[in-house]
Length: 95
Image (tube, rainbow, N blue to C red; front, side):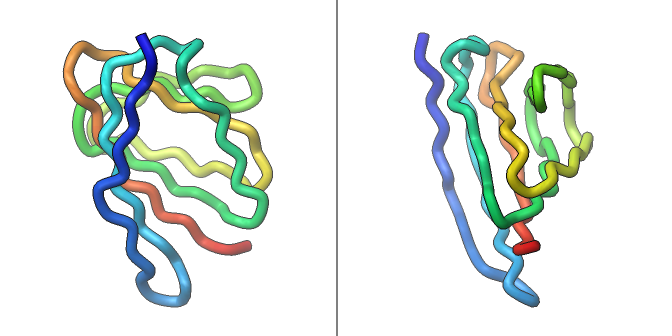
C-alpha cells in the first residue's frame, strides 16, 4: 500500500512563516517518504487521526492536538497509524 499525502492549503503568514495542511491516507512505515527541510524549523500538529512521527530512528505516536518541533536539516518521516484519514497542520519557519 503506498502512502497518499495531499496538501490542501499552503500559505505564507506573518514574518515569512508558512502553514501547510496535509491529509495523509492509510499507509505503512515503509511507504512514508523521508523528509528533510534544510532551512526550516517545523512545528507539526495533528488535527485528526493518529500519526507516527519518526525522527532519527525514534518513533512517536501522535494523536489530536499533539505537537512536535523538528529542527532544520533533521531527516524525518510521518505516516498514518490508523484506518481512516489523518490530518496535520505544519508551520514552517526559516531558521
